[in-house]
Image (cartoon, rainbow, N blue to C red; front, side):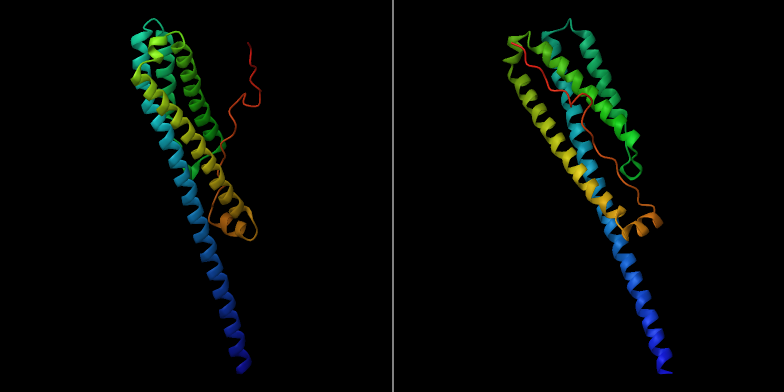
Length: 196
């Protein structure tokens, strides 16, 4: 009778250890996934801040460069497209991430064209409101870079955790999927040429 009792205790202890390991592993993956979702929300918040600044900058420049209507139209269209793309971090695919990045890249390119216009208007560059908005824009761009880096680091921790053995057994069973990363913008590998 002692042997069968010992066997039962060993089996129950082994099952308890496995259940505790499953619970700990699952809860860890949930916490990491929530960290990725939070990091993604921070990225979206910084992009929204940029989208909110853009109309103010456009309106100030419009007053100085009314004949540049096609540029303003392109900026409005790029902003509209970028703000319409929504990505659910729970089901994010690499294709959705690429579409999101492309739309945000178009906003950045449109802003670049807007800044090129301002070079022709020295009185605009001296405008206090314009300078304040431009500084906010630059600060927002830096915040976006930091948020994207933080998202990638958080996604890497999450992806590594769910792909490692034996965690991959839990992640496959509970359908935890890897998260895509932000990649360098298209053409970023080219070194800019300075001409004098």
